[in-house]
Length: 429
Image 1 (cartoon, helix red, strand yellow):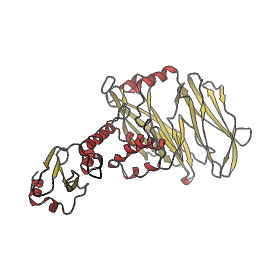
Image 2 (cartoon, rainbow, N blue to C red):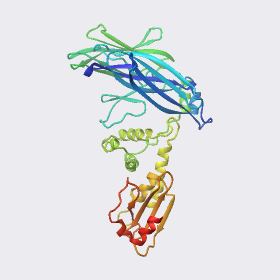
Image 3 (cartoon, rainbow, N blue to C red):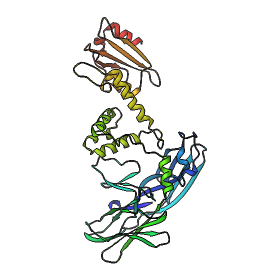
Image 4 (cartoon, one colour):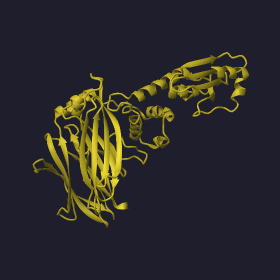
């Protein structure tokens, strides 16, 4: 747990990290392409038994990851509490066997304003490009800073930079001296950075940074951040981390190959990839993407699809693959000509196709005599819905004029556009 003090309400903000060892899991589907899964549940109660937090969710893990020595996943949760003691109960249920592993921890909120928060370690720190810059997988937000945190980071020879984040609380403006040191498990000092003077505003501030620990032998260590008003340390905060060897790095790389389809895309290609997502976006997701930097746009797209991945932890994202396959199919099947040259995904037929897939039945009248050409799509799986499209321009530009789907608009004069004979045929279809 890492604790941060908030003067408003004298509350403590807890960031909790729970490591789920893969040794607890059995594969649901064995083999290189298989997966394991677990359900993570966390409950927080005060000493009177009052429940402050109760959350649960399911995670998937590729079968190949189960063979990584000391392999694990990290689950993060957060809650705020007033002064007092709290019990945290965690349960991990293996989806393959139903086996449940439980753990309890007790934590204490700050009883009075502390001099500093707990020390939070990270494998990366970055400034958010804007308030709309969303945290990526594994990141948590601290003000304008996005922190890649896992509780107790594991570094490797090729990823040997360690980040730290510490909040300092002071009632008045002052300047403090901050030094960072690395100690072995036996307490021997191995690394020390030059002391740095940091000005703090009234109320406090943050000291944070990245330390390069390349060459540190495999083992368990502690990072120590010390702050003081002179040469003496007035407060010290420490947190644990581990340095793994080359064999761990190789095993992770072999078991979890990186697949990032957005990394090599140009900004124009990213924008083209983004546009059709209007069909899937929530209200909160709309409007933030256009103002982002190039890397911000890449992160936005990664986060967008990570939230919709039906099998997190597996190599592919089935929802993402299926969506863009529908885009390609819609562009091929429904591209409209004339002066507009509208791509298929932007047409009414393309939109319905992308949202709901191919119709179960189609009534096509390309050479209707008493009305303009029209066609009706009928869906019978899960919902009985119909969509009627008409080619009003005679250039093959079909627009939606009526539907039984309340989420889509119908034209008030759709019956007049079709004519009595066609209306009867549509209603009987």
